[in-house]
Amino acid sequence: MFVKRTLENSLLQASQAFPVILLTGPRQVGKTTLLEQCSEGRSYVTLDNLDDRALAKNDPSLFLQRYSPPLIIDEVQYAPELFSYIKMAVDKSKQKGQFWLTGSQKFHLMNNITETLAGRVAIIDMLGFSQAERDGRADKTDSFLPTRQWIEASRGQCSDKQLMDVYSEIWRGSFPAMWLPLVDSDTDRQNDRRGHSTVAASNMDRDLFYNGYIQTYIQRDVRDLSQVGDALSFRTFLKVVAARTGQLLNYADIARDVSIDQKTAKSWISILEASGLIYLLYPYYNNITKRIIKTPKLFFLDTGLCAYLTSWTSMETLEAGAMSGAILETYLFCEILKSYWHNGKQANFYFYRDHDQKEVDLIIEQDNMLYPVEFKKTATPSLSKFKNFAVLKNLGRVIAPGAVVCLSAVDTLLSKEIFVIPVSYL
Image (cartoon, rainbow, N blue to C red; front, side, top):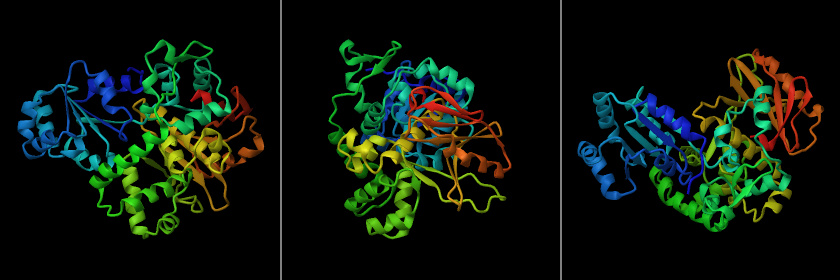
């Protein structure tokens, strides 16, 4: 089954410029499928196979003789011994795109690959399907930026989304397994009002999928990254962290709720970050703004998994429940993040909060300017709600026009410096 991914062009362009490509992301977001779709006849080997893993670890030279480039190596984090031999191979051949690698433990990989393959590897981050990919406009979207040009380019490509359309996607999540089974059949595709071919929700049992995902995740990634002796406590930890998506990270509160110490809480947060399940958004500050809170905000990178862990059994209860605003903010943040990562770009993202409780949900730094963005669960935003944008002038930087991303049906100007952008444009 084939779904156009925004990353395809980024992957092929990077492969023409670098001898090694590393595609990282959580398990089951489609890394291997993407590489195979773009592979052009490459050989493929996965280090999930224990025999191949043993060979790669114990005799990397022989492994690369058995599996010669151009080559896809899946789950390469299991054999960091390969990196030195890959370096020798690409230095000898001088050819681009020789090795395409995937890994599910990004930060575990970075410690090895950035030292060994510096200057030879392009690192690309991948998450589940973006809204644009599900809506069939993967090749028509660019990285989000609240500018008139971006808004005008998005306006003609998007279909309307009502409140429950958005929460349906939030509740289901972005893993391909939740969408792919119904692709490629005329009866299983939906067409929006502008004629776009869109991916329909699959008949995959949501609870069954996420329960199996968590069990596999704990058994494989957690075991590899750290000695977590109590799997039951770690599962409780996952639920406690999921309930805090969109909030400031507080190790003491998490440790108390899971009955672990703060050192363990910090270690386990690092595990979630390393395996691509959460993102820590850090505050923007400089030496002038000493009153700014310097604690990061925590975001779950898949809202479906987050909703499952926090026991929301339907999109209706999720929309009406206590997490409604926080999980919408998480969804919108992740969609903007995907628009950068899936276009092969670095996301220079921050947020602002000071001790006077003045906050800006997202700050995008680009071309020496700061673009402020707010996320709101409303269809009719009020200008009075966005006075906090003005506090950014204290940062001593050029402040570009900002935006509120919300449930409005159309884009409009809230003021000469604030755009209203519908969720469907992302």
